[in-house]
Amino acid sequence: MRSLVNRLASRCIAQIHIRSTAKMSQAWGYASSQLPPEKWHEQYPIANGKNQSPIDLVCSAATVKDFPDFNLSYKPSDLKNVVNNGHSVTFFASGGASVLSGGPLSSQYTLEQFHFHWGEDSRRGSEHLLDGKSFAAEVHLVHWNSEKYESFVESLNHPDGLCVLGAFLQKSEAENANYKQLLSEIKEVPLQDDKRDVERKFDPRILLPENIKNYFHYSGSLTTPPLNECVQWVVFKTPVDLSEEQLQAFRDLHIGKEKDTPCLCDNYRPPQDVGTREVFSC
Ligand SMILES: [Zn+2]
Image (cartoon, rainbow, N blue to C red):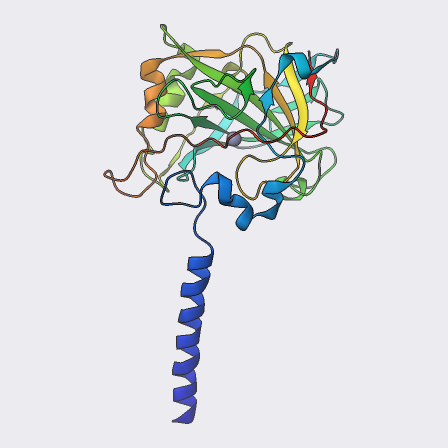
């Protein structure tokens, strides 16, 4: 009898503990019902670190530097799947066939995934700013340092662990044929936790602007929790054009598991202090 009472009591305590833990760790996000970016530091103290991203990329404040050309050995390899995780829509690569080196990088990096940030309308949505200007959206191609580290996860613990290529997406009159198929696949994952296999050859290079010689480079962080300061950032100066209808495909996604949940929009972190960091421009 006593052991039954003890078991019940400990179960009660466990439930109280689960409840209080759940209350303490409000899910991070961008919507008003979630832990907003300005409070992420409550759960992720590194949010107040000195090397956080994104930032406002100011041309006149950047150090002009010539870097070698990028060596983008992007093989049209198989995509694995596309996922709506309630924070963004992410395409995962498989096989590690696409690698990147050159530019400001001193190691070879392997493509892991790419995802997007966007606004509720085309006047905002990018994470980085260009001379204070925001764009309708931003694509991030996330690579990990496969020359120095064993895995993507291990790379998260090192300042040169990841290289993210960022490109601004802006509204234009014409449709972008390079994005057409991707955007139809995004429509397949409208609700949070939706996941679809994407089995086809894909060349990630088509996501980027034609001109990849002009960009900003700086050391920063993941722009979403856990916000590790492990990213060598490269943000291209030339935006990629998408039509308003194409940009709308992102806004038709939802942050919940039901169609009547709010749209997954404005999933961008505001710019962080550059501090004493040097930002390079080429
Ligand atoms: Zn991102």
